[in-house]
Amino acid sequence: MNAIVPPSKSLRVASWIARTVVAVILLQTLYFKFTGAPESVYIFTTVGQEPWGRYGSGVVELVASVLLFVPGTVAVGALLALGTMSGAIFFHLTKLGIVVQDDGGLLFALALTVFVCAAFLLWLFRRTLPLVGARL
Image (cartoon, one colour):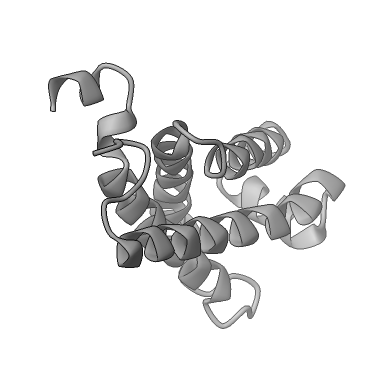
């Protein structure tokens, strides 16, 4: 069995859906982060990471999105997305709140969606991780 391709058609389809969901969500936020949109500045100011946290997380999310579509790097992209969303969820639960500036909890829901999809991808492609994959 090829470690890069999920073994069944349903898992292959699910992996492409999950990759697309993660990438679309992460990429659509880049405009707001890189242009200094008021909501992004508010979020990163509130958590004490403006502007470096805003730019840094944007770069990590861009890299993660690209890696999700490069054969052999899906697990690394998923790991980056999972780590970034872990931070987002942490700050929503500790400093920002579920609802940020009357968004109805949309940003929190998107972070959870990315987290779940990235966790699925990491599990699915875990054997392709450097060092870890060699031991499984």
